[in-house]
Length: 208
Ligand code: AMP
Ligand code: ZN
Image 1 (cartoon, rainbow, N blue to C red):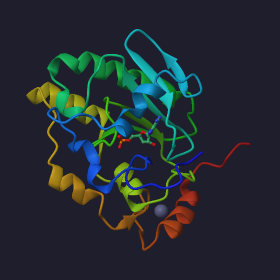
Image 2 (cartoon, protein in one colour; image 1 turned 90 degrees about the horizontal axis):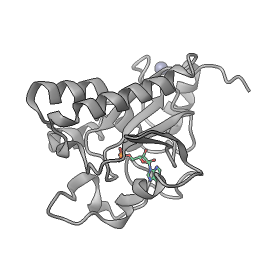
Image 3 (tube, helix red, strand yellow; image 1 turned 45 degrees about the vertical axis):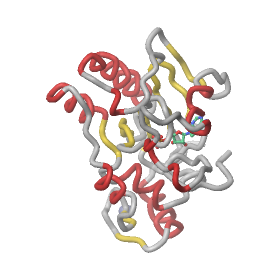
């Protein structure tokens, strides 16, 4: 079931001034941003786990298949990552690829939102059909189809090259405001309903 009202990329209702991980180390994490931590314990959402990570279904999926892979270790956001986390991030990517490989008929991307809404680092594993009633807004669309979505391999590369992940907040906020464009054929659209009906032609046929 989708959130009734959405205001940003996560699908969670919140005050407009709380967008993104502007809740930095000095500020307490607002309660709504801790939802993933409790969902990690929710059997209805939990897909699998091992000694390092938990895989859950995204509660407000933006595609037919949308999973989140979270480390068991507390890691607040991309800014908290350093070179020591590289093996963990590689493990998360491997688990994500294993999930994607279970559906060879679907294309997937594995990556992170540059400015996540929710606390605790989480890797999105999302099929590229974007066929979901929860995908409603331009922010949702651009958060998964623009440079706002950073491929897992690029996050790992940044950590390998400089030991940290850099996100230019102004630039990333701009990505969310970009004009609507099909992620496959690059055609422009004025509205989300028009874009959503167009992208179905690129989606694999549903088998059931
Ligand atoms: P972001 O923080 O922007 O990377 O996105 C957070 C993701 O978490 C979004 O795709 C939401 O649909 C999803 N989400 C929000 N709240 C919950 C929750 N309580 N349990 C599981 N997924 C959630
Ligand atoms: Zn198209």
